[in-house]
Length: 108
Image 1 (tube, rainbow, N blue to C red):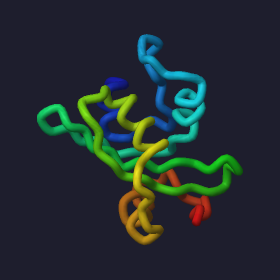
Image 2: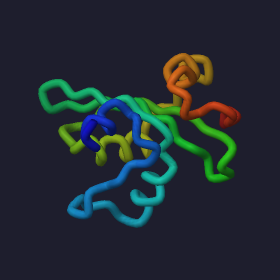
Image 3: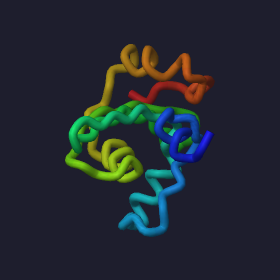
């Protein structure tokens, strides 16, 4: 499986943003906190659902949003920073079976 396929399936533990992306230091930090994601793109409009680890390291929350045609890495970081927070029930339904949030408590 290529890195691109792994990222599309949300199988990589952390994003590895390309060096040519215009990430600032805050974006790079957020990228290291991303646990898992789902990414969709239809006709240049992206939508992502992202599980993000809290600063304490033992909690997580999930966010959803859409954005104009960004690259996948940029869209995922943008949603992690600006997305709408999902309810715990919905987030667990999406991410719990994927195994990346196991053992972490929900961040209210």
